[in-house]
Amino acid sequence: MLTYYILRGRGLKMKKNNYKIITVGIIGIIIGIIIFSAIYFYLSKQQSASFNSNQNFIFNSVKNKTFTIETSKNHFQIKELKGKIIFLKVFGWDCQYCKKEMPELIQLKNKFRTAFDIIAIEAQKHSNQENLNFIEKNHINYNIVEGEKQKKFLYYLTKEYKWDEVIPMTIVIGTDGQILAFEVGYKSYSLTTLLQTTLQMITKEALPHDKGEN
Image (cartoon, rainbow, N blue to C red; front, top):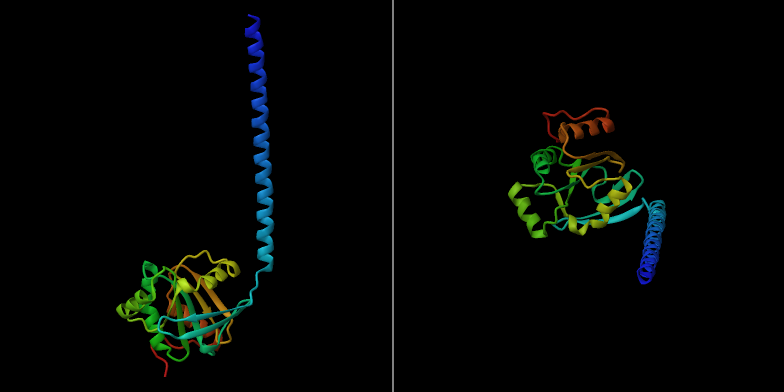
């Protein structure tokens, strides 16, 4: 009987010790999570604070055209397209909403040949040859850039403009490099309307829909 009580007492002590170890462990984990979270948010804040809006990027289209983009706050200067209104787009060949925009983009490029241009970054990881095949198949007449080679620029858009990687995405750049619109997703109004509105903002008089550029 005495042995039983001795063993029972040891068992209770062991249970208490186990509870203490578990409690200390849980407290340690909670403290660790708090410290990790504090460090993470501090570093994130420091990174955001030190992010530089002024950066330079070089785009090489799949047809070997080179474009140099100098970025600053709300400005994109593309020296090779200086004086033009530009649609800088992010799209994908497998995106149904992106496909809906393509015929209209082709028409706009034909209609406003010297006053307007398009650079479209393909973000669905198609190779250079696949991009060339899609260009031929869809009769694309504007500049296509391979997205896998522009990860740094796409990251820049997420940091500087809070882009959430939804496509299609259209940045409208004015003749002076100012960003006039940042449109995400497929819109109910047309890209023609967007361009006409932009022209009106710049010239005070939009070019007629039924007349092409001379």
